[in-house]
Image (cartoon, rainbow, N blue to C red; front, side):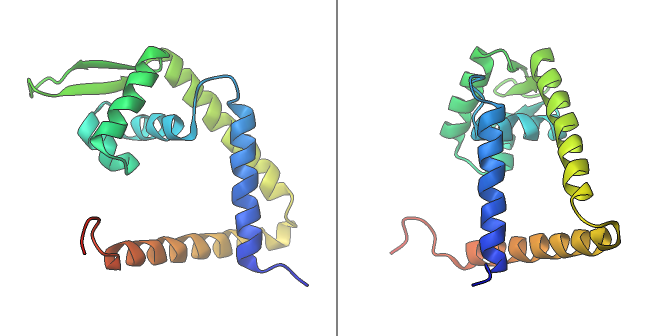
Length: 153
């Protein structure tokens, strides 16, 4: 029996997770910590409250992530320039190098994956993958919007 498209997508997601685990084995960088570093790289120095929103986690969870990344030398906290009660979290040089290396590895993998597709099919594959991602994003957003609030009867 031919696998369903969703089965192939799940296979791809699993392979990406395995590859990421292999790439960061022994570094102390978990998927959640990498997500936070990725968010900081794109957003720039941010408050923990903003990072919690960007990462979709609780403020308590973001504190633990920032604590761990600060201990490993990937982020630093500094006083917020206009809010005495807040601190800014920013990437260190170590994290900036890690993220640059990760971006290069993404570009290399992107080129390898695209090369696996026949040149005449590449545009169609990219359009199809984009359409699937956008539709799945909309489905997830709709499901989240219609889900009962946590703690509601």
